[in-house]
Amino acid sequence: MLRSLPLTLDGIHSTLETLAFGRRIELFDRIDSTNREAFMLAQADVDHGTLVVAEGQTDGRGRLGRTWFSPPGVNLYCSVVIRKVLPPDCLSAWLSWLPLTTAVATAESLESVAGVQVMVKWPNDLMIGGRKVGGILCESGTAVRSGPFQVVGIGLNVNGHSGDFPMEIRSSATTVLDETGRLLDRNRLLAQLLLELEQCIDELAANGQHRIAIAYQKRCTTLGQTVRASLADGKEFTGVAEAIDEDGSIQISRRPLPEDERTAEIIHIRTADIIHLQPSNL
Ligand code: BTN
Image 1 (cartoon, rainbow, N blue to C red):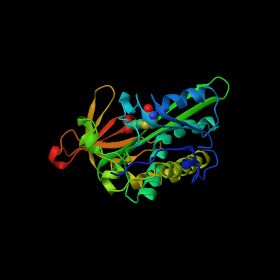
Image 2: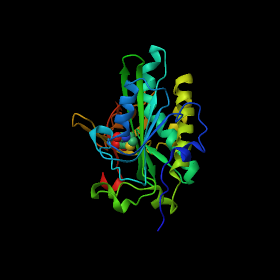
Image 3: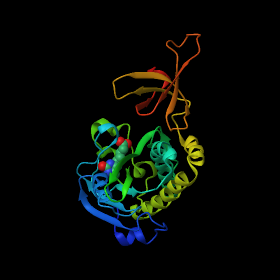
């Protein structure tokens, strides 16, 4: 039977080409959540680029308060501490674009290492063949001495099988192995991910979102689709995803009735669960 090679410090460092990302690595066999650990380290003033990575998580966290399925030995669960000093007027764009930028970097790294096309479902679900292969959770905090920081957490389903997923996500999620038939060296994938992430985040911090937004839009499968957006307050909207705003929100145009002649109403959504609707489920 094919086996996933373990993550090791030497294995990650052997192909790591970054300046800051992953220069300090905290590698755990099992941890509750790499995001939680990275957050605590950031509060204790660790350097920009510090990486927390684990073979398995016992309390992996997802977006919108969900849990992240984190079995040991086959996937990537990692979190990077980010400290960038930015002018106050750039802060809001920085925070909204950080998860989308991470999605672009992760898609690019997975594509180059696994040789498979990776798309993004707004805001930051990583998709292969219409099924979710990874997700991103960004969190912000402030340390008493070293000031504001962000934690960028990435989970990727790499060398497992979707047949082992919990029933409720089995049909919507996938793994790189299922899609390509090949086991990946997760050490190599992580080193490439850190490189792309460092470059994309440096670009965002130095020049704003302009170039990242172009790369994001090329990969975003949500654009042009009929979608249902479920908001945190329970409201739901159905319409066509038209564009990504300057602040990373998605624009959805909707008509009260499909045959309605009036101009469609445009709504701007910042945080939501998005479902791509096929014409058959409208
Ligand atoms: C999502 O819901 O799509 C986001 C999932 C993010 C999961 C990753 S796994 C590594 C890091 N640690 C966590 O607890 N969550 C993120």
